[in-house]
Length: 400
Image 1: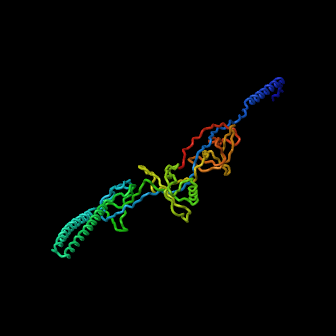
Image 2: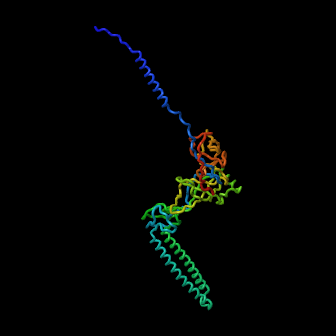
Image 3: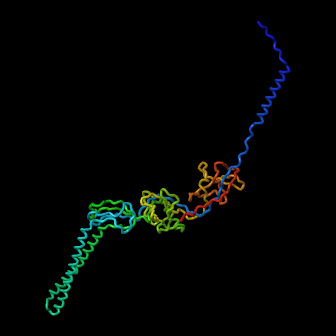
């Protein structure tokens, strides 16, 4: 068995090794300390855009739902009986007053007209003969050649012939009307509906049973009927008494209308009718506006749903701001403004209605305030900001 020899360590070498390891560790710590990230720098002020309120004289509006209706609507019915011979329009077309729509077989009525004219000719001949005989009788009566009874008889014959003439002329006029009624024409200018009967059908003109051929509605102008509540009517009457608004019964009140797919109430009209009593069941009063509806588009169609607005106040000066600048804090409306030191200030405001996209501010702002309209999410009261002050383009004046 081999003997284990003792291991002799060199103290100087061990000390040198330990010194080297200590130096390496210190160098690593120093390097890590040198690469420590710097603390974050302060956040720059938020950038915002501010506008001053628009100052303008406005009138507030009351809005109501309504329905469009034609100014004129005609049911085209047969005035003589007979077979429908021909149709002269396209369903849904626009026709002018006097345009031919239907022709009812005229042969029967032409024959009646010819007979009436022949009867008139006969009556005229009888009158001519009776007139000649009466003139002869007058001469003979002077010479006592005929009796007074004979002369009186000839005078009555002449009177009867004159009456027969009037009757024959009336028959000719009636036959002429019936002949004209076989040609059914448009009584007004407007849009026609579909034909209710087709060629070859028998149409009836009996009283209460006359055949409906089609319907026709006028397009320009057009009515819009709507119901206003009692409080609104009382307000309009008060404005009229104070001279701040027109009388709605005199057609002096302007109104505006928009369809379901429109904005800005582009159609301008006048109120021309107010009903004579409040509906006790609903507490409303029926009103009517009349609006021009020029062709060839005729945008307003009878039966369309629409919104109507009527001036609800006299004109007054107001401040208007973009609606997007308004915030809500637990039901309270507020706006942020920028002062001369570019510091955000908090203002509670009392608002009015929207006027052409801008919100009326009744209380809480001054005309020279700068309202923050962009960058609202990055600011708070008392914060410093970088403000861009820009003029706000005012909308076109509205109202009557």
